[in-house]
Length: 213
Image (cartoon, rainbow, N blue to C red):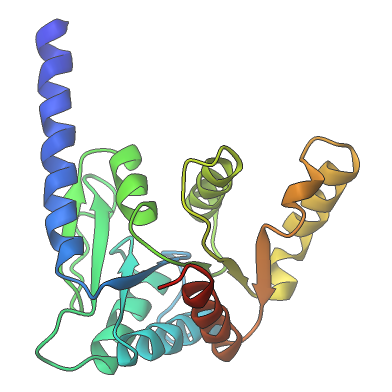
C-alpha cells in the first residue's frame, strides 16, 4: 500500500511538472477557457470561443483549455490564428483515458493521470476564467473554482459565464441559495455573465488591471 501511494505521488508530481513546463512556454498573462466537448466547431458558442481566444492571442495573452474537441479545440485554433507564428499561444491539459485519443491540431496537449491534476493546471496559473456553455465536466470545473475562491485558496480573478440564457437556470439556483443563506451574500457577485466576445475581452482587461498586471 505504501509503495503504491509513493508511486502515485511520483506520477502526480511528474504530471504537474510536465504541465507546468508547457504552461511556462505561454505568454506571462493567461486565461483558461472551459466548455462542452460535444459542441460542433461551427456552432455559435464554438465560434464565440474561437473569437475570444483569437483576441487574447493577438494581445499576447495565452489560452489554456482541456485540449479536447468542441469548444476546446475551437479556442486553441482561434489562439493559433491570432498569435504570431513564432510564439506558442495556447495549450491543452487532457486526462488519460478521456480525450487522449483526440488529436488536437492547433495546440500541444499534455495528458495527465487524474482530473485533480488537470484542474490544478487549469486553475492555478490564469488571470481570468471563461466558461462557455457545457455539461457535467464544465460545471465540475466551475464549482471547483468557486469553492477555491470561497476559501481564499486561489487569487481573485474574473469568472466569466458566456451565454446569459444558458446560465440563467444555474444563476436562479445560486440566487435562491444566497436567499436561503446557504451561500454568503458576499459571494453574490462572484460571476460575470455576458453574451459576446467583446464583453469578455473588456472583463479580462479590467481583471488584469485590477490584479495590477
